[in-house]
Amino acid sequence: MSTHGRRVPPGRAARLRLRRNLATALRGADLLERKLRLLLDRERAERRAAEDAGSAWREELARADTWLVLAGARGAARGRTGAGPGVARRPARVDVEWAALMGVRHPAAVARTAPVRSPAEPTPPNTALAQAATAYRAAVRAAAEYAAHRAAAELLAAEAGRTRQRVRALRRHWIPRLRRELAALEPALEETEHEEAVRRRWAASHGAR
Image (cartoon, rainbow, N blue to C red; front, side, top):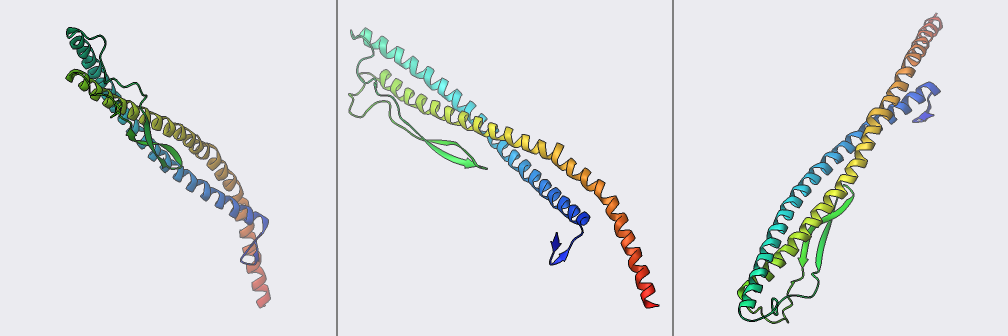
């Protein structure tokens, strides 16, 4: 091995290599730990958002069901069967925006949910049914947000687990191994360098004579 055109003895070359590998491993562990902190922070935020969206979903669904029962009761009182017109038969469509954090692609937000009731459909026959339709639309959006936040949390948690394993491998195995090898090499090199220094001084003193 040579440095700037100067040949480095094998022992010193091994020491340089170990020091460089150790520095690289330490930097890598620091970067991975920073990544892990960011992933865990975002995962916790996504789980809190999922809890809020899940609560909103259940509340809106219960409200919608209540309005729908009331609409059915009013329809029955007026001699109608069922909830009447105005109930959507098309499935809702959900558009999700995606983002990336530290290389992890995950759902970031619900961009749009298609209306449960088509504008072409007739107006609900009573206020209760209209309220039910509004609450169901809110429930659909809350359910979509809950699913998006939960999926994001799971993806981030999976990457955090893999990152934690890499950090553990560096901190517990690779870095200690490099330090042991370097510590074992240093005394022999120091003795060799000391002997070389003594020989140079001896040669210099005898050359002067």
